Length: 236
Image (cartoon, rainbow, N blue to C red; front, side):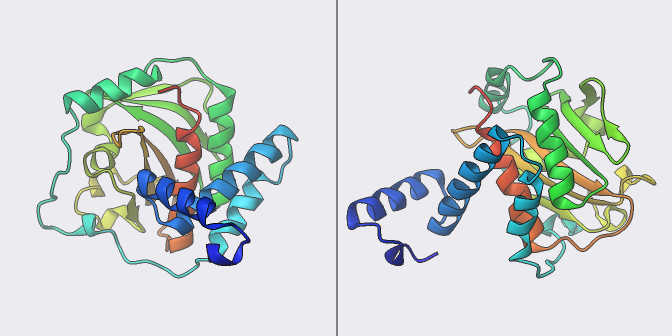
């Protein structure tokens, strides 16, 4: 998107640049997410079944396959932020999500992610220093009846929380840090961080498949866009 051709004046262009910088995003990403947010909000208001289709179309513009994440390396992973960081844990607790009741809003976002990504499963979790609280989870057989809890030590989410980066694994059986999590239902995996306004990773949005899968740059951007939409629905 070339903002100079949109008809906006210098003042609006300057404000867009300022807020994109504040969000830590490029101008294109900031504008893209603003448009997607507005469109998704209006479609949800109309109870339109087109929401997932819109997000799937958005991802199709970038279909080039990407390489395995750097986290596939057998070298020691550089930790950006420990999972028990006091400020991060405080940010998680401030969301009020850990231990909260089932919420159709989050179930809907999980279902939307599943359809948009064409995956076998999707979930939204919030993670403190001890627990991965799975707020919403959906698979091809339906939506989980109630939120679930998993010990952090047994969860792949720890990697995403500590790096604050999207994790991409076409086949976790070949992933140095994730191969122990492989099951017949979990082979391909991707997870995007859900971040607070201060930049702390408070949760994750993840998707998985039962067979190896070539995730594309479009898949990554779409998952990150939906994670950003989820962030807008959290009462920080």
